[in-house]
Image 1 (cartoon, rainbow, N blue to C red):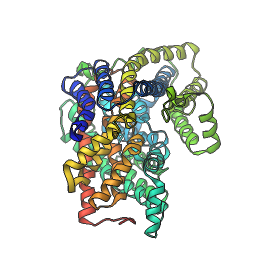
Image 2: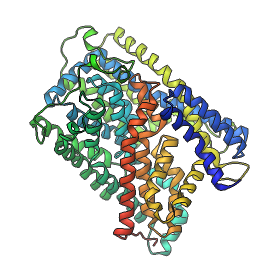
Image 3: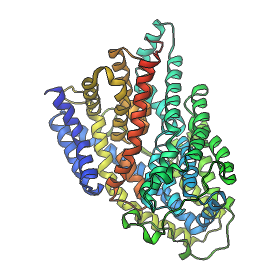
Image 4: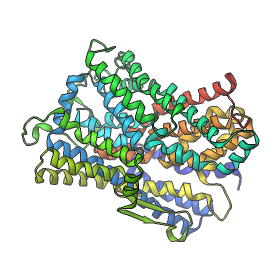
Length: 564
């Protein structure tokens, strides 16, 4: 079959998903079963995958679905527990002491706190944590999900203590072959690896400086009473200041310390600087911005999860410090479980459900690490909260019941979404000896654009993340392809691998199963298409900027690497 036709067939499931979700506004629970069926047909008929491998891929997807649902359940349960304990009421009140301005709250809660959670945990956790917290603070559910998804950009390449680089880039490149090439040039792998990491950090920092401003502008334009761009732009000095407070230490950590801590360090330094500045009113506009009255909001803004604090049992006022303690405990445990070797070993080796070489298919494995996943750590925090905030057993039971009901809808959608993703990724092993479907898509892009390919290289990374819902997996799939393409067109391979990682981070903002997961935490299942139409705007901004920076670096500054 013609390679172009094959590449277009590979695109078909994604195009169908886009048409159904975004074009026709179908809910994901209707769209994704259809997309899964089409994926299976293409895998069997066009790619020559065996029935056994397709079924094994579906089973692998179901195991991964279980892992994602565990994270969602943990995030929803933590929120509901804090609602019933009275903590959310205290947190909401505490923000009034920092600033009642919703734009400031976005920057502190979604951007800086979200970046910290991403750095510590990754894998979609910031949206699952930040979105319900924003709802609890009085944001419309759809706006909260949009903002939570926008956080899945700048910090993502160094999320989960650097996993997208440490695992994704290192595992996605032919390390042995590249090391031999570097040795012949008088260099070594570590030098090349540090160069990639530095270029990822600097590129993200240049683009990410404006992300807090873009979040504020998106909020006021789509969820403000006046639907105004200018109300978002009015906070530009403070937003850019907050962006710099994050990206400068973030970039420095990436260049000098490596890939593990940029997002964590950037967020901690940023919070230390920005929170006191907000309290002092530094660079803030004189006019405070807020939403219209909730009763005037369109129905589609609202989720099925409501935080009606006044309807809960009256409690003695809780201190802001005690109210925030579960989130601080969550952040601390996430970092400890990723950094401390003994703690990590305990969490990864206990309470693990897995299947190696599913149905005999070599390399197809999956597991649910109940303790190590953020969902397990959130469960530990929920139990700690029960005792620390002196809750009644009936309150905890109510939180568990509410969370379980919310989970059912997300489970149905993800049961179809993630298996579809695994079929695409696993299609590289087939009877027709064809490249995997994501690889075929990437090759079509590369051959179509020729010498201007560096501009499109980030979009290839985003495509991988859109498919897989993961920066790490996108890097694993596409890093070697980017490296080889760079050699073919005579440009820096380190730079193209770096913008691959940047683009893959941006692609997380539109990754379907991330949108589904975040939507589930605030009761917005069925409106994924509307959210995608919003998050495509910052995604386009990110990819255009990354592409322009890649072209400028190559053709303007003549950036090279040890292999040139």
